[in-house]
Length: 226
Image: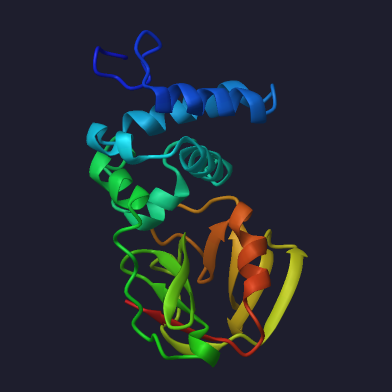
């Protein structure tokens, strides 16, 4: 519920929030407007009040719309935050401090193999965090929430190279698959929980699958580790 100190309280919104809501009303389609507006309200409420004066409405609008686009279809946590901190509270939400660090671009993933690949271009999968990292120039480029093999069908650990890519959806429901050894691949899938649940592959949310597929080149190295 909104309170006296709530930045999204319609009776006392800050100029930043008023500008943000105006941008949402102008640029978001009528069909999606209620959902995006509600998402924005939940998002802003989780930003520490001391951070709000330093934020820019245009930048905040871009972050909110971007995270909304990638939101889990189950409707709880934005995937950018889930990848940043996969161990969530019992209510399915991360603490305000996690959102604050994301907005400050802090907490960057530390690569285990920064010099691997051509100009540092490679992929790393961290089983302990259930995250997939695309690296270039020896630095993390993108970090994605993923789900690896369930205990009875575990993901293999080691160093491999991508040898085949299949666009589209196959008969098993795998979307935009990039294979790195045998039948093990990175691919999109409708269900991507924050724990190991696949048949051995690295599942990623379908909205992320195409960009990951396009970024990977045949021959790029991938490292999977605990």
